Length: 293
Image (cartoon, rainbow, N blue to C red; front, side):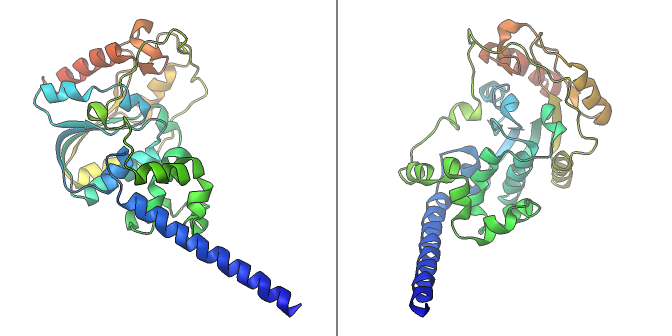
């Protein structure tokens, strides 16, 4: 019996040591990554200076043409992240401030995302390689019910989110395999798809009366003298539940409602995402309204 317990103990110790070793290797790879994605690039960056940065979900990533701002003399980058939520947007901004980014204006896309304080697991996972190296990331994740496992169990975060930060992603990062996330100054243009979903129903959505992460973003901007421009971006003409945007405006009067400035389906790739032609039309309006350009 004693020999059996010793054998089991050796196996457990071996597993722990392997987990610690793998955790160290994976973390090292991500810690020195850059030019891969927006999160990795911000974490591993130094002070930058921008006239405008764009934050939000795919409805920011696909709707604001960065080069059009640049053409008007405004140094700009689109840090919108497809599938992201305000949880990730707030954290990304905190990292920028920590790295002493000099930002004059932030355009924040916040409409559908105001209905939830949940994190997007696929996106939030990309912050986790740095959780032991950043108090900001640690504090941001601390309320998570899985925080203790993510923080204290070696390699747990890499195993749990294997499809996002597991072996394949670590390997691609190690060989500096670039993605298109940073192309076009962060803007991702869409085309008109023949089979694009041109119907959407948001009738059951309600904005939270006090979205924690939106309030964090507002507080950060106020504390750092950043002009925050929060907007609701266009939806296609077939959407059901358009009164959602009226509810957002009632809950957050400071948010500018642009959901109906571009509505024709020809300007959309899907009901919630404009194609490149629609995005350029929309960006022209934003430049004129907020920057007189």
